[in-house]
Image (cartoon, rainbow over all chains, first blue to last red):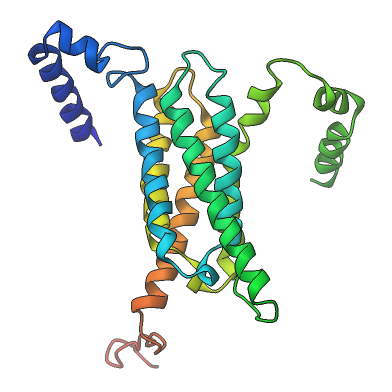
Length: 125
Length: 126
């Protein structure tokens, strides 16, 4: 974990030296919700959840977990409302959480559709 | 222990709590949102008894990495967010359990584990 911190700090130092001022303005290098601050990296991690959810589109509907879909949808939608009121406003986090909420919702809809079309089967979820 | 629980429940049912939950204080959303992330570990714990077929490997691995990073994040922000740390610690444990069940189900053998037999020359019988 300490090695990763050093790699990160080295990359930030390189970025500070190499990028010109106009490039920094374009990329928003010094913004309080930018790559130098911690508010930036948490939505990057949450987007990995969104990508896992998109990757799950290929799974058959009977193999989805109902509990996990409900909790993902709830946490995604609640956080996307929360992100709009905190200071600094973190639109990136809001977008990622909204996408997570939508992922959870699509899983729930698929489970509901499966239950609707196969009413008599005893499913695992 | 029972009196502690009784006192805790009576505090939850008290008038102050009911007033707080129905009020429209502007900071209330932050106080309630601290518990929003608990859905994930509780869902994983509820799924422990179910069929391992419903475990999705991509989501489980992604949640393991996510919880590891957020455990560190919760302790590095000022002020330290120990509730978030506890939530993600619980989630990490639950997801690792689900991952183990999934791997066992997919790649494990149906044979039970062999009992380890103590070699007879080690045992000294009187």
